[in-house]
Every structure is written in C-alpha cells, then in structure tokens.
Image (cartoon, rainbow, N blue to C red; front, top):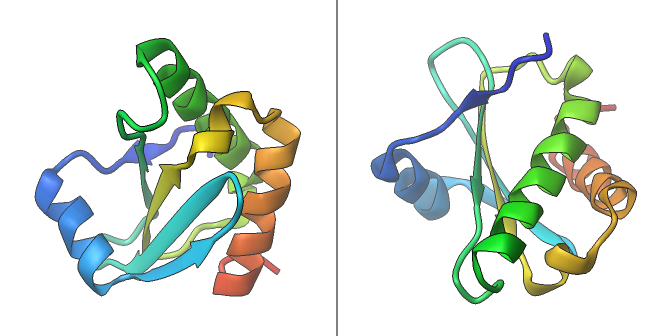
Length: 111
C-alpha cells in the first residue's frame, strides 16, 4: 500500500473546498470528503504565497512523505486535500507529520 493515488482534476479540488470539511494546523490545512471510487485519493496544493518553485516543491515533498508514513491504515473512501501554509517550507517532516496525525485523528480517519 505504498502508492498514493493523486487527485488531479481542478473540479475535484473545487468540490472538496466547497463541500468538504477542513482541519487547520499551523503548517497545513486538511480538507476531507467522502468519495465513491472505493479508495483514498490525495491532493496537495501549494500557492505562490508560499514562495518560489523550490519552496513550493519542498513543501509538497514534505507533505507527501508525511502522508506516506501515516498512510498504512487510511483505507477508506475519502478524498483528502492538503494545503501548504507559509510555515511549511521551513518545517521538518516530523513536525508536519505530527500535525497531520492530529488533524486525521480529529477527522476520524485514523485512531
């Protein structure tokens, strides 16, 4: 279960932003919503407010790796979107992972 299935379509992101539930942490915002495809899909967004391309790519890598570490027991029908915040570019992966676990516990995704 190492592979992460990505959300790619803009309309999927818009649907989740509009109708999904959000959980805010200092380094990232998580939106969740049920889907009908039978597996979890994950999207990661970084806006230009975060920084230039290098910072945005680092933020995406950190978020993706943190999710990969937690991913083992998130086998539900969910769409999850992680939005990087300004502090994410300077944050350590463990810090982001801790906040991600907290948000996921709040959302009832993991125990």
